[in-house]
Amino acid sequence: MYYLDTCIIISFFAKKESDHVKSANIINKLNGDFFISTFTALELFCNIYRNVDKFLLISGLEKASRSRLIKTKVILEYMIKSLDLIIEPDKVEEVYLKEFNSNVFKKFFETFEIIPYVNLHTGDSLVLSYAHDLKKRGKIKYLVTIDRDFENCKESIKNCTGIEVIFN
Image (cartoon, rainbow, N blue to C red; front, side, top):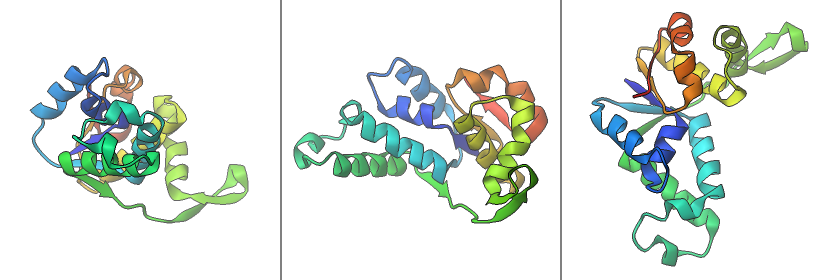
């Protein structure tokens, strides 16, 4: 029933993060399925790779490999399994976007439709578009985050998509 935003997952696992305790408290109170999109999985991968030392929380991982890429993959797999994250596959569809005079990935088109109502940054708008798709299919009701940008427009998000933002 929950779409987990990248930032709350990162803070949950990076114990030195300033929002770690807040993230852990939020996630540990929730009961239900946790969904992420392939985009969120990509954001997690990029964040872990850039900051791999923050995530050396798996005993022995620092000795297991010198490869940053292998460490990143192991940490991501650990996160996915620990939270039992359901990664919703992309539907690869294109639609024509008149303004671009071109076909675009349908998810981008749907994001263009949401942006005027919520005024979020690109990545956050795309996350919301993925979450909205899951909401329409009855898989989620909530977007769980510690990102203030979502908190600041939670009423607009609810009015536009029907998704409730859990911030605290």
